[in-house]
Every structure is written in C-alpha cells, then in structure tokens.
Length: 205
Ligand code: ATP
Ligand code: MG
Image (tube, rainbow, N blue to C red; front, side):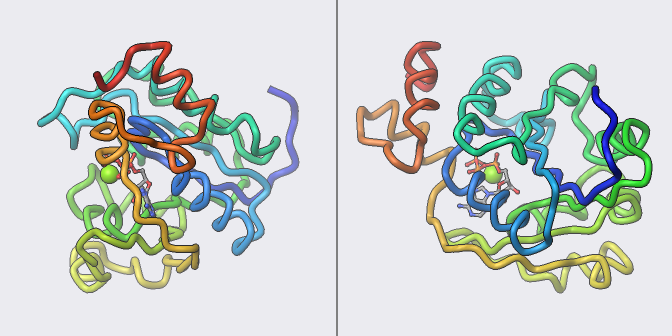
C-alpha cells in the first residue's frame, strides 16, 4: 500500500447482503459532514450476529460492495480485512488492524441508528469506542433505538458520538432480497451494477 498522510477515515461495516443506496448515502454523508478523507466499506466475513439466517458467501458480498463503490470515486474503498480474517468478524479487531496499518489516523465507525442500539451486544463495545468515534445516521422504518440504552451500557459513548444527517431512505437489504426473489423491481435502491452481479451470481432466488 502506498504511503498515506494520516487522515480522517470512516469505517462502514455491514453484512452488505446486498449493498444498497442507503449504505452509499450514509458513507457519503459521513464523509461530507465530518470531512473524511476516505470511507472504508468492510463487509463482515462472518457476521456472527446474523447466524439465524443464511448469509451469502463473503467473497461474493465483497464483489457486490466493490461493484457498488465503483462509481463513487477514490474516497470510497472496499476492504477485504474481515473477509480474509478467520473467525467471527469483530469490529474492534478491524479497528486494531487499521490502526496498525495507519497509525495516527483518526477513525469513525459509521453506522445506522439500529446498529448503534445493538452496539452494547457487540464484542468489546468499550474497546470500539476507545479506538474510534461513532458516526451515527438516522434510519427510518426501523425501531428508533435511541441512545439512552447505549449510554447506559457503554460508558462515555455520548462524548464519542457524532450525529450525521442524511436523507431518509426506507430501504433494507432484507427487503431487496425479497424483491429479487419475488421478481419485483429493485432499481435505483439496488444500484444497477450490483443488480447485474446479483443476477450473474444467481443470488436471492
Ligand atoms: P439487513 O436487512 O440484511 O439487516 P441492512 O439493510 O440493515 O441489511 P446491513 O448490512 O445490515 O444492511 O447494514 C450495514 C449498516 O448500514 C448498518 O450500520 C445499518 O444501520 C446501515 N444501514 C442500512 N440501511 C440503512 C438505511 N436505510 N438508512 C441508514 N442506515 C442504514
Ligand atoms: Mg441490518
């Protein structure tokens, strides 16, 4: 990897099964509002919080993310860190790896309000908050978790939170998978190049 000036970096994790417009808008909003140099989209290799449902193989989801990011420009990067790391995908471990690669960078974990509400149940949430600030975007249509429970469960998180406004997009990967299966239209919430790859790989049928 080329030498980089230490910068401000967003880390957007997810299952990305498949990646959709709201993921891209969230990343772009975080970049604009926080003045980030780049946003790294990190598909989870083993999204252990989703073991209750079948998940598309990680290598395919990484390809879908790469396809989704293609039109965005060099600020948006796909990372294979979690796809290549064995074992359950833990965000604190990803942050530690990024820190080793690029010491001195300032990092933000970018996530939706639903994911923030879930943060206390992630692995080592205190370490996540110690290693990164948290950029949270609103998520319409899902239960508003609020930050009350999170504040109780992860001490000091309020001081590490940055709220990032973004245009409300009522879209989820779950709904898009259903739409593909049901033969319903998915554009433009599922970017066309992602849809093409979904069909090529025969996913969600
Ligand atoms: P699924 O329905 O399979 O859970 P998803 O649409 O929630 O998929 P994820 O990969 O689970 O997508 O989410 C990755 C990140 O993107 C999470 O932080 C989530 O909160 C955020 N996110 C997903 N959809 C939206 C949305 N419509 N608005 C804001 N944030 C979103
Ligand atoms: Mg989700």
